[in-house]
Image (cartoon, rainbow, N blue to C red; front, side):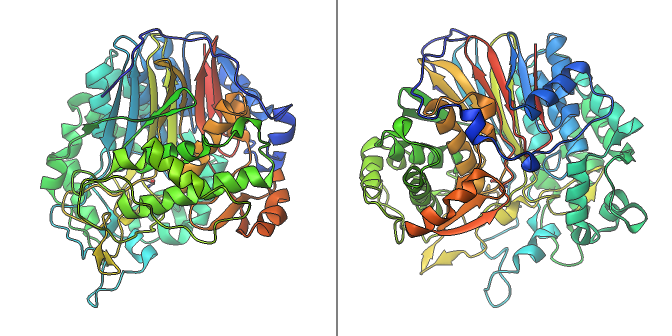
Length: 596
Ligand code: GLY
């Protein structure tokens, strides 16, 4: 737990250095990158919120705000907040609906990390609901008989990739600690939508079509997503009676109904696939626990940027990126200049080199968190950035560390699925939660109306590199390393920003850029989440297609970077807390911000 000095709720955000003028004109993605869609039956407020997003404006409110990846989920959360529930209550309602209407990204079968600012105590708490490896697994879990790694997608689409889900227990734990609404009532909207049917969105339909082949691997999955053998299409009405029944049981009995008994037995049975069966057991489910961990905070130019520590690499990597960049006057630099992007790109590459060597589940391996975010260490790493050209190569550094172990490097990249929820309630509590089933549709195994994760493929498949053990190797009960970066930023102990994104390994770059855009370049949250992405985690500069970022391909190539123009589908959902609340929803996804 990280104690914040002040318990004041809302602070006046002081004037920030602004380099970019007329940011919304120059930084918005082109319209074709924006998801434009009408959702039937939305409230007037949600329709207005969609309009604000289309026009590049933040949604403003005075009392509460919720932002997430689907309007129906946001409306469910807004209803809870309007009726006097708090941010923990609203999160339960949002997650229950997201698992239905955005099943490809998160749900009961997955895991999540949550950062909570408590207005009354001024304390920050982080909760780890990451999936766990089966107790029967060992470091050879993803190796074949010759000791070579299994084919990645073969492992993903199988029972082997499924870890013990953490999301249901996180919903319950957050509600137990902080919630005040009746638990059962938080599932009403999701149950009704599942029972009566909801309209399949464009994004869900496109995701189903893109994954149709793998969704056909398991009969129950194919029956739901490919009815009659054809992918669902946008506008279809989809009923999920099994999900309604699962939620009814959780609503009535708590998550014991999920982690023990018939639902747990069905989950375990579903992972025993013909090819590459998993080793998950009823014991794994019954013993699953959410773990409270210390928040990782880095003071960036007077802002405490706080997030989730190991097994996530998110907060450490973001702290490392910011801690290197604070050695340069970023606020005076142009976001569209290649030198600005050289610094940001190589700062990110250096952070990923450290991540590959040191970051893993700290309950299983010692992780030198303090050394990695030490200001002097980061200043030394920043010295590497003082040239004019791209770094020809990067490698892990040597942070201060009281441990003899040397690790091998692991460059596993998490897949770009996942979802992010940010909520501020009328008491001033702030919630930032990133939630996932790993890749789109997870393991593709559908049971009891929800998909099971493939989170275990976030482990290194190899157990060793260059003769050294890899910190992020599989071990029984261990949690795979993540990039998820739910973040709350505080100034003088008072929250000023809640933010996070999906995007696999690119989550870190998406979130760091958006924090910089808001804090250093003075953009409001909607402008900041709209800004085109340029991310360099592993050596190739990924540049968002169909945006002004493409103009930087030649200048960055001239500096020595390899470049790749591609879709960079973040799903940033952010709330800034100042004179008023401002909510931003990523135009690359279907979500909205809603507040009153
Ligand atoms: N599975 C996405 C992440 O944990 O980063």
